Amino acid sequence: MTAIDLERAANASLAPRLASYLTEGTTVRSWLLTTDHKRIALLYFASITVFFFVGGAAAVGIRLELFTPRADFFSSDTYNRLFTMHGVVMVWFFLVPSIPATLGNFLLPLMIGAHEVAFPKLNLVSWYLYIGGGLFTVLCLFLGGVDTGWTFYTPFSTMFSNSYVLLAALGVFVVGFSSIATGVNFIATVHLMRAEGMTWMRLPLFVWAMYATSLVMALATPVLAMALLLIIAERGLGIPIFDPTVGGDPLLFQHLFWFYSHPAVYIMILPAMGVVSEIIACEARRRIFGYQAMVYAMLVIAVLGFLVWGHHMFVSGQSPLASMIFSFLSFVIAVPSAIKVFNWTGTLYRGQIRFSAPMLYALGFVGLFTLGGLTGLMLAAVPVDVHVSDTYFVVAHFHYIMVGGAVSAFFGGLHFWWPKITGRMYSEVFARFAAVALFFGFNFTFFPQFIVGYLGMPRRYHEYVPEFQVWNVMSSTGAVTLAIAYLMPLVYLGWSLLYGERASANPHDATGLEWSTASPPPAHNFLTPPRVDAEPYAYHDDAKAPGYENKAEHPQRAGA
Image (cartoon, rainbow, N blue to C red; front, side, top):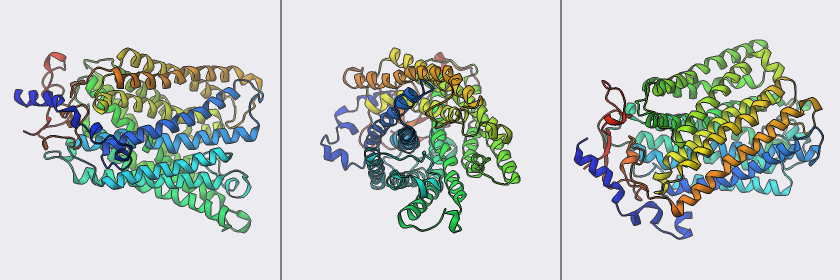
């Protein structure tokens, strides 16, 4: 890239801010009927934030109740409804759409040099489906909630529960179509709308992560929809499907549910891996170590994710042979995940590391994801899984992956691309404090649950024996720190919208097409069609050690 090209890219920030996507129509109608992928991303941002705090409020109630061994605030029935709504809201209305529908929607077209997603109207429809499913779920909450647990296990959900199962299942059923629409849209966008020169092996890893995630969303979510439809058919229409007294099979639902829900883990974690890859490469000023291995690892994870659902059913009565096979496959899928951790470590080696807020979130992700993954290997071993099944050990493992991992990456990505999204800079001091608080608060909240779970405390009980109280007090106290870490970004990011310093086109001095356009971008992303003429992540020449004094020319740029 020539000096003239560098100057042109730097001057992209001087493009008229009045022409940015934020100012292309300011009425409510212009937002609710927009087909701009960037605006739809912001609609998702606002929506998932609301659901995050709804689910978080339920978590606060859970931790308050568990502060003492006896029931102080809620009856057993109310407590059942509390943890069910926490799970339903957090999994399907926050974690699943958190990165794909927000950062994915905003960044994927920018990263591949497209002016829009392949199907802009379908993109808007997906948001309305999400809101529609959310309204059913909120209505269920106001009417009294649901008490089956977020997994809707039969026959309890179909024959015995006296709560609003149909309404909750309908909400999740509808929001599933939002995921399918988003996945299909992203697949078509990556296939059909890449910029000139953007070959498959020049795609940023975040784009690869979104592509792999979209395949899982498009292929796995219909199975969840069918399973929930069968619950609705049996409970609402009396069609015997899971009732064993008339030849039904209640375990059939578990197979269908986990055939979706274990791949759904990777719907949540693969995008996080893509975000972390972008941040680590930029903040270490290093090329990604083993780029192709990282790509293939993500694709292998997406495929193998469909083959390990049975490890959720070791105590369900499945055959020992089936348990042995699923156990083996669960160990196998750990290999590509370990490759990613190894390659992130290799990328950091000899890097000129900047401990910015996004980097702290990314490093927190690596630590929490690694611990969650190691405990996942323990759960893949049948004897250990039988011992800790339905205990707080499983709760801790799940949260280390989904919350510690996915949420850390979400916040890291939000901070990393915040200047691009809003055109404003935030307080780096407060952001670093929030990142550190999240890491320590999370560990203080959930690590004691590994111990108390291994000691035998079952999950989903609002009373417990007194010898477990010290661990629960530690967990509930850590949740206070975690809550502060979650609330802080709401304050300083909101402040930055009004008073933050104006962001340049590329405040991180990063590679990638999204950094070659203005901050915030114009309505159609690029003033001129972009062109890609080299490999991604060229932060240093292969023959030179990385350093700030030898910054690489950016290989991905807007064309003349």
